[in-house]
Length: 424
Image 1 (tube, rainbow, N blue to C red):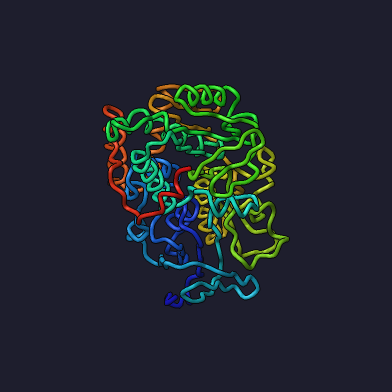
Image 2 (spheres, rainbow, N blue to C red; image 1 turned 90 degrees about the vertical axis):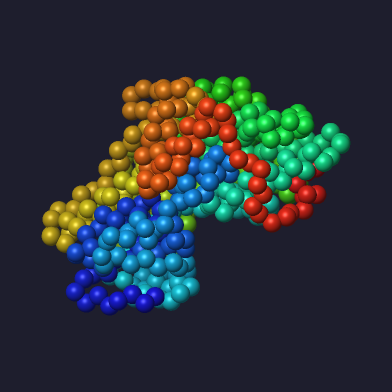
């Protein structure tokens, strides 16, 4: 990997530049350690806003920031664009597509990937939404479907089906509904909106399972009023690329978006005894149980020592950020032989946006919804985006869209695909 030898400083290798990995890399003291950050992308993605890229609300560069830009002022911090394939925990070596590298300490912060629950058909035919490329694929699919709908005379229906009633699914359904009723009539005045249906399928009895009953009911009411067909307590059984089969209904669609869950992105080399439910077992100091120089944080890690979260912390950005900060501080404390601190998750609440002036927030002691929750959602997400330019671009887009529902949806930026595989 062409990393300079570090004889005076211990080498810490961090795999993953998501919310957790980036916090560790930028808050570790580069005077005490040589730091190597590895990721298969050369940018950090603000994933909570991927659905807005998919539905024409934001451009990809608004939610992505160059890793090299973010670390440009830090010495003894090296970035390598690589995919790590295997970890040798016995000899402290990682193997990647660009070579191997020895480490003194290894931090795994690889995040999560889409969970298809072992269904190969769903994995093959559905559209996931975990990466910028996948958001652009979905955007292209939406636009191709709409363009082709204008060329047919038969009363065929375009079904956009979202599987998963968590924040991603709810926010995507709301955004598609706004697209249908406020944006498409401007660009496609001859389009019959009755040809377009939006379905949201949830396996459990309520939307937003991690939130309060009140927020769930409010979100359900919002989403139904926006014209989305909601199917609760309706797990998906199969999807063959044309028809989705669920417990209650069978629907034809070439546009099935899978937002039904995630699992840890685990690298080969760790034995099964270190893994539980597709996440790496760690103690309250983020150390992989039984290995003194191996740590894991974020979605890929599960810490069962927190009594409030016996099955691990939520697989969202906030725990990953807090874990990254805590681990970096502990390494800095360790250098001075100070007492390290166990991790304590500070839950600041959960939130989801459904549409303009429609959002729900569960805070520590109360729930808010409507315009106030919507503004709070925007402020918090804007603060977390990396880089002033990206914050400004996002804010300008949001302000413009608020006043005139202005989205530029007329450009197809992906190759031609077979229209016959879009509509039924």
